[in-house]
Image (cartoon, rainbow, N blue to C red; front, side, top):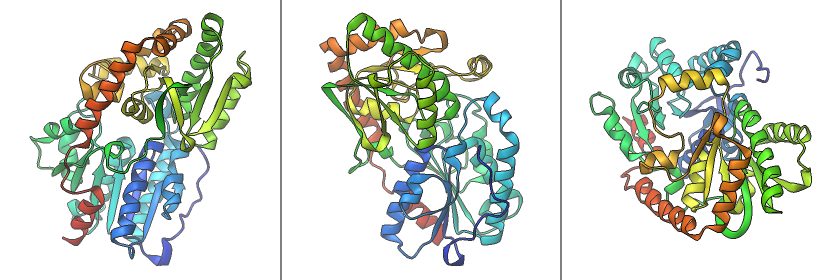
Length: 389
């Protein structure tokens, strides 16, 4: 993690209407869409964030780029506990000093729900007797683990916006107001950076978290070598979310036997037309599914993190599309099952089997239907309404 100045800068013009907290690249992108809509409906509002480059591109003041600090897994979190604690306290002091009208927490529940609780304990949030609205966008995966969190959430949050329709049922036994606001990837006007093209490249998506990328990308490079040895040449493209991840990819590539000329590196924003994909289980895997790109999920965590996770997490799949559809559209190759020879054969099947292409196209249609929904109000509208109450 990068060093953090002792004092965070004040908000523009000395005031803040909305503070976003988004600790991952996907959350940063979701928050940026909300900020854009807020600017359209309330151009007079001022916004600050613990976020990343997507929020900054929308003109939001980024106090600290939290996406550069993103880690996953118990072992990795414990390793950086001191840095996260300092950031947490610095931001809490900032909120106490500058009193935003609303704090919009985007995903990132380990940090965000603790922050909401701290706001309540200090009497800053409405649930704690103060004036600040606390809105959580994107539910933690209580349907997978730590289900009892929902009762604490009802005590510390003013409202929750969920992006998967099945999540509404998870909160029916609480007092927390919960609304399905539609998934941002299924909203009208959303431009998916990924497209299916039978003549396109083989897409590699190792993720956006540094530790996960360092474990997954070597497998993907070995898969390239295996594919070329068994099936011949093919264009491979790897997308990265920001320069820090690109640097990790280049370091791994330099240490591998794969010729750098056999893989093209591109920022996510440039997108890709792909005929097949190998992807981590993160948010971009849903973009793949909505584009109907055939492929598989590849994931490898720290052995201890994986061992603990298997005992705590009660879900059948890691992939978002698989969870929403309730079936395995994307085969999942986890830990030792992520074998480069097996993955190379899977890529070839995706490229050559027309029945697979049809199955993924049908899966894309079913996903879009479930995720689009008919939300009566957007997140920006909900937050604005709560602020005005």
